[in-house]
Length: 118
Image 1: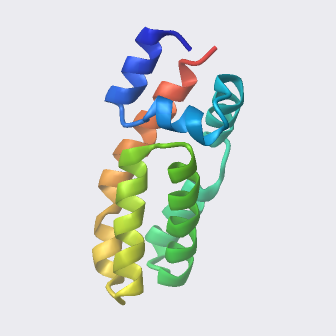
Image 2: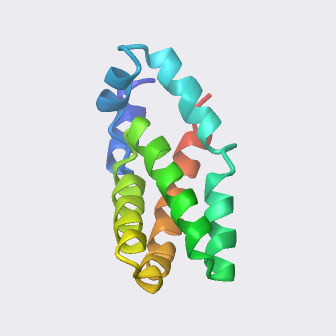
Image 3: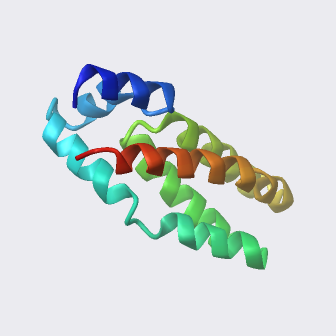
């Protein structure tokens, strides 16, 4: 990952140096897991839960996505999913559902960045 790519990722909400540190300093391993992120079905599960207003499944998916995005240092996705989990826990599912649009925008942005990796 060259410096230009790192800067682009950082601007897009992915803290590359933090992510590499989470993977014991291995850039290759970090990139491998970044590439696998877009194949993860958790966002799809969350989307279905939002569509059906299923707060139990919404919480499970938001919590899982929070973990994955945190491990990959995707700060914007992590922050929104963290807020969603807080709303679900406070028995405010509508508040959590309202955050979906912002999450979808950040999620899609992160996936576009990842698609640029060779």
